[in-house]
Length: 139
Image (cartoon, rainbow, N blue to C red):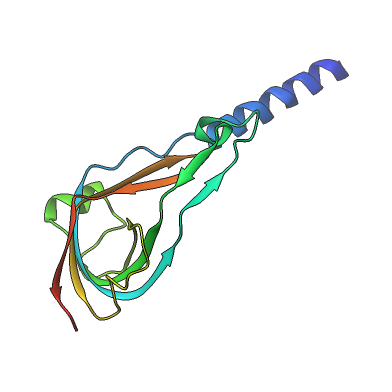
């Protein structure tokens, strides 16, 4: 009986870990306009794979250099509201924009529009892509 209970517990732990290791589905592209409140640049980073992990976490991977940007007073198309409840007009949003060097391209106070922004990921990390960034105003 103890072996049976132990086996059931082990199966539950494995199933639970598999449930929490599901990949984040790629979101459909969305255009986001907002005012840059905070911006920091993160250099390229590599991570070694971890044997026994799920998804890309088990492989060596590279995370591109990028800007971490906090946008305020965002505007997204009406069609995005139901699909992305975390992007609401007038709210704040955190985005990651791949950029190879810390050249001061983005600065607090700028009003920008990010075209076709999307993100997704899995146990190994999160990735984002976008078609372009347009600077609408500098202050």
